[in-house]
Image 1 (cartoon, rainbow, N blue to C red):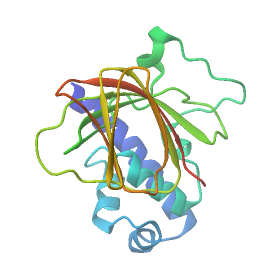
Image 2 (spheres, one colour):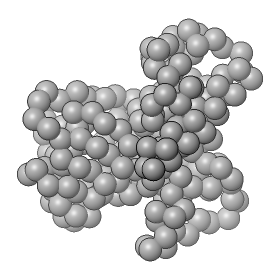
Image 3 (tube, rainbow, N blue to C red):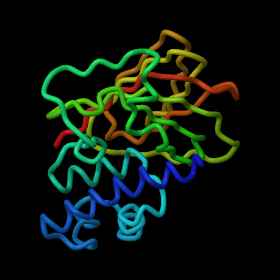
Image 4 (cartoon, helix red, strand yellow):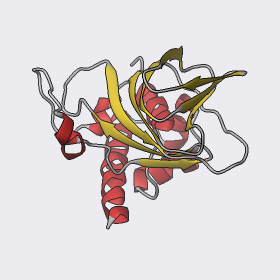
Amino acid sequence: MRKGRCMTTANRIGSKITTLRESLGPSVDDLAERSGCDAVTIERLESGEFAPSLAPLMKLTRALGVRLGTLLDDETELGPIVTRRDDAEVVSRLRDLETVSDAGVLGFFSLAAGKSARHMEPFLVDVQPASAGQHKLSSHEGEEFLYCLKGALEVEYGKETYTLAEGDSIYYDSIVPHQVRASDGASARIIAVVYAPA
């Protein structure tokens, strides 16, 4: 059941990527060169073969000249968006969008879905523990702000690693290679605000 909903989300986002790319003219190879994503990744995203993660989506939207929200939103609203505590999962456009990597499973819940012309992407993120192994860092243009709500978090940033406890926060330039993961083998919950220049 969960897998089916995840593929629906992936297909919707993939379809939007395809529509944008075809309307703007670049081939998959052209978009790969502009964005820094490999062509195979783009093809799999467009087909909905796997659920996308934030890093490639941000690279693709920048290369296409659109906001990240263009891919994530179904409808847009000019006024303010209010997300009530008990409704976060209901209004989420990313509740099934999970990224599996050596950082563990990250479940993203959009907190501003539908807000038009926004420059920030706020998320409630559930971070599950990762299995032991090497850490693969990601890098993309923009800035990120993380606030730890529950549990403990490790943020590997360049050559440094920062540990955040409940109530701690961190703000960094996301062009520097980084990885966010749960600490102490327990899950964590954070607020993440991502800014990606268009």
